[in-house]
Length: 308
Ligand code: PSU
Ligand code: MN
Image 1 (cartoon, rainbow, N blue to C red):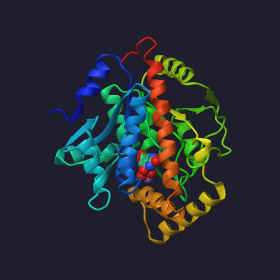
Image 2: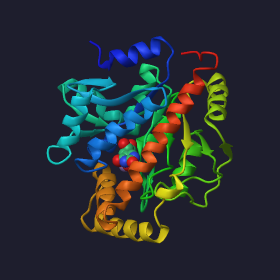
Image 3: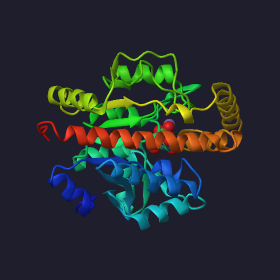
Image 4: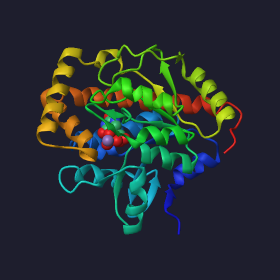
């Protein structure tokens, strides 16, 4: 019984050593409302294709961890975000969902894992999970999974609703390489700067690919975060977003929202508080990450093959 399903397109791309970029589905199912979520899910795939790579959106579909879902499935998942949402599936949820033959939207942790199993090296998301503010024991399984799998996660930093200094500390403890893309700072999702210094920086996709190649040749299965700041024209005003996040955190505390529900709850609150400007920013940064991931994947294919 095989619980991993790789689409024909992704399978042949990998066999022919063409560039493939994994995309996650929690962003679609829980991070944004219908119909924006469906539009963004499709736009991310188009962006990857425009740069010559093959997109592989990951989700659990009828009990199979699927790398490369089709358009109909993406729409079915996106529509469900209004009511009977697809389960938000982190790493540890994959087995139970598969056992029941159920559907689920994969987070960064589950998508990183699935990408690694399929042999996909680049993965684009919006922002990775991390350490929640006010509860330093709520640490996303994204961090540990990135540490264990040979996948580069392109993200605009960790989501701003999180405790960024602690998130960076945990990444360091886990030995995750965090590389700034044309920046010396950890980006803060909706804004470019955080004041948190990064030790490594690259200027171009080709340089990023050479760095990944060296890193994986030395370390094998060790993840990397490529920290790509939101494009300047789409950056939100710092004071506005800080106010919205503070209000969101207070609201979540008041309503006693914890665990898995917390990140979607905070993102939805911030979207309302900013009159959806946060959604436009989220879309822009995710697209920029898809573009960069595709460019790096293309550059990586020009270098000698890495051991599986
Ligand atoms: N990036 C976005 N929107 C999202 C997420 C990332 O722009 O909704 C999702 C990712 O799937 C990430 C998850 O893995 O939020 C983190 O949730 P948690 O803090 O519960 O681990
Ligand atoms: Mn969490």
